[in-house]
Length: 278
Image 1 (cartoon, rainbow, N blue to C red):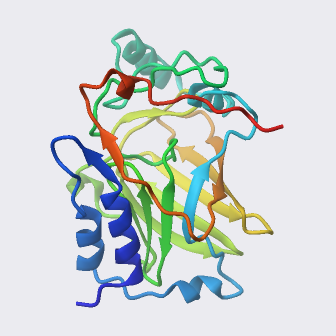
Image 2: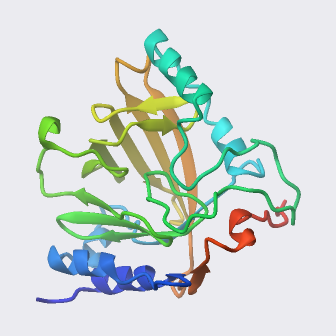
């Protein structure tokens, strides 16, 4: 079996995250190699396709100072009465947080001031929206992969024209089932089959909820605007939409080896805001 460049890149990301007891193995590389990606990056350089392959880091474009504050700027989702009641019940019961996360105070933090964002766990499950870790996009003819630098499931977006599976026979996951296409220079992803949970801006989701993402590259190729739109008549009175912006990293960027020790108190204060540039 041919080991492609995509597999090699994903291997580097899988090797980048390490625990004290167990070094994370190159699981993603095995998966990628097994599915036999044969596409070539040059395909994305055709005039009608955006070249979004590479390493990206999410930006705080407004200087909000924390992920909670950034997410608060997404606007409030307009929920149906039934969904609003369910969301309120979940908050009262302490639910709604992803495993490994703790509630953010949603306040800006001064440069150098650490704040708690995790419960110390080294096994974050992954997800859809980028977090503070870099993510890598790998383009090929039949698939696009989105691989986070930190542990968790990678996303596979099928580009071969297949449809979504019968959800009655699908086990929901944090990344769901995604199919994609290109529309006038924009990369469009349609996703269903997600595990029930929260959505930025006070939204909710279930397996049947439909997420549409539109990745639009800036003219200079340095920024990627990702527009998320959630549709589900059982949950939303109108589609819930927000944007996240990421910055392309230099071509010679490479992930550093990282240690994660769930017994280390500093693991619970993993975000220390740097000084914000004007």
